[in-house]
Image 1 (cartoon, rainbow, N blue to C red):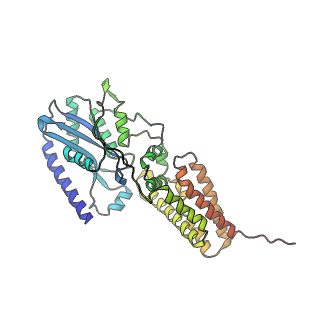
Image 2 (image 1 turned 120 degrees about the horizontal axis):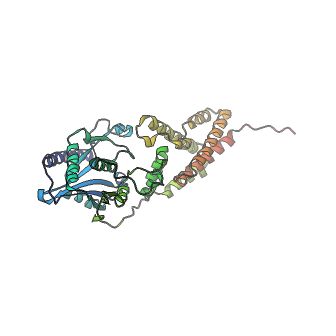
Image 3 (image 1 turned 90 degrees about the vertical axis):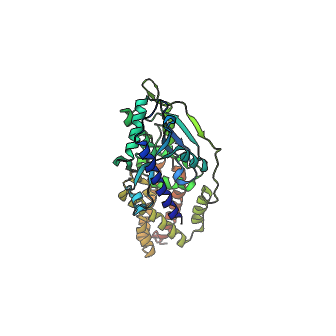
Length: 379
């Protein structure tokens, strides 16, 4: 039922976009035309945690008020999930009426801010033409990348292309890593924060020199000059809602600590075995993603020291009651835990993964102690 509804909505978006775009193709903007960047606030759903960026083109003389959106995709794509994971899923640009756009964000109770671009009419026309033409060319499709190619970076690219220069560059938070920049966006979404902390590799530990989030673009636009004047006018609030803090009985640090505490203090072989199996399976998942996916954020994931597939070897020897090799692989994994601690000691996600690190160390230590060969004492 839900899938059918999504397909119908998607078909409507395509139809309306195609209809509206056919009208937009031959429009010559008037002196009353305005082009602005829309920054949409964050939501409580996983897809909306980072906000959204779009471009608005309005011209009362031409009865035109349209929003261009990067980031649409087809739910009906064959092998949708695997293509998304691999990074081969085609995203595309779509346009719709501003009134429909704003009604959707009003319904979702998400803020919307507008920054009008302070550029001459000739460049407004050029930008409008670039947006309209991209809907009918190969530029319409692109492969989404979390940092390098998303709804915000595409807006930056099309504006810079219009201005024939790299005018829009990041002006704030360039001394922070991408991981540090992302971390506050997961406040009150604990398991999303934990999941991204462990699935992302070294790329997100690089300095965040690229604009990749909507609010980063909003902040930078305020500071950018073009032809000796501000590139954008004062920020205008279109929609603003009182922030609501989501409450969840399970999506919080308490259930996380309670579960790990249970594993530690119950001290049962079956529980320890299941726990280490889950940890090892996650390690295999990260290994698979690192090789299979073209998302660079998933490559070179040092969190595999914590979620280590080698644990399966220790589990095998444990299940076959081979004490000697169980002990050796338990000790080996303890050493990897120590190495991991020194790798992440300066990282922003240290505290969130520390309980897992401690749990691993406790279980592996008691596994090693149980299987250590005892030296007979001769009296």
